[in-house]
Image (cartoon, rainbow, N blue to C red):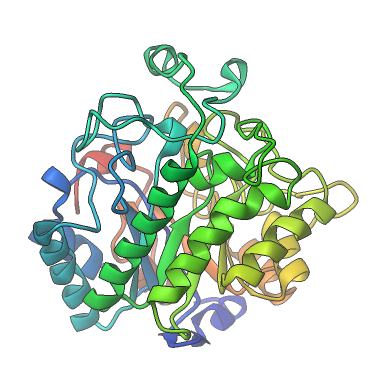
Amino acid sequence: MRDQLEPLFTPFACGSLTMANRFVMSPMTRNFSPHGVPGPDVARYYARRAPMGLVITEGVGPDHPAALGDGTTGGPALPLMHGEAALAGWQRVVDAVHAAGGKIAPQLWHMGPIRLAGTGPHPEAVSVSPSGIWGPFDRAALPPAYLEAVRAPTGPASESDIADVIAGFARSAANAHALGFDAIALHGGHGYLLDSFLWAQTNHRTDAWGGDPLRRTRLACDVVRAVRRVIPADKPIIFRLSQWKLQDYGARLAQTPQELGVITGALVDAGVDIFDVSTRRFNEAAFDGSDMGLSGWVRQLTGKTVMTVGGIGFDKDLQSSFVESTHTLDNLDEVARRFAAGEFDLVAIGRAALMDADWIGKLRRGEAFKPFDLSAYARLD
């Protein structure tokens, strides 16, 4: 192992979460949980990746009927964090990861406007969005059939809709805590529900749930507070945020560092401990006048623990890798350089960990990684 990578193998702690190293398995949708229930194969899949400092699961539906459905990354076998069978399945997963010496957090994920109406465990449920707006259709590199299906506007979420969403997140966070998960992760990026309230393009409300950047944080902050009330004070809450959206890869949640500070500051006040900063490429400059990435800005603005993710290990970003030839890229020296500069505390690995369960072992031993393999998405290796 190269000397500059050794700091990434030092232990880390945040509250009750202790990690053997600074690497995190990033959440990736898998669609291998029929009827919302993760089986023994899912438990084995996550346990094989336990040598990572922390495993964050694929997106898991909180206890709300419109949380999950078909969509750009959704399907009929997305897992749930409620219901006796699903919780029993997750107990197997937690036990398997802990038995292998690892730590694990579920990512609670409400699809919001991305969900296709009439799909999911509750097809009768009405999809939830702040203003009944999917987003800008002229900027989305998504299948035409999907875009046509979500084109019809829906009504804005009512006060009771919003209250039900918050309560559903809290119930599922309490379930996850009872199962022994080591932290709770919330998906607040990519245009899904929490992000759709944060983003000006999809939140046109003029009531207490919309308006300026601070007012648009209210739903996300209320969800964080609700989760904090049902889990111990020292159990970390992880919040994923992003500039880019499925509706617009070039979108900006925050136009300036000042706007980013308003959003992240509100989330810190609500109880976020760790920011999962999702970018298409981790080393892209976030704002003019500096080469610092988005992770570095979040860390500088909040002083909180930050993990970076995006394009580590491959020469194409996630979205491009589905349509363009993609090759292994050793950009870990740049990861180490930015880590040493204080841009982030943790390094999340997505596709590389999906395709090679022993990725972190090979990194330590200086062995070659497996090449990019698009067919890996259809397997649970």
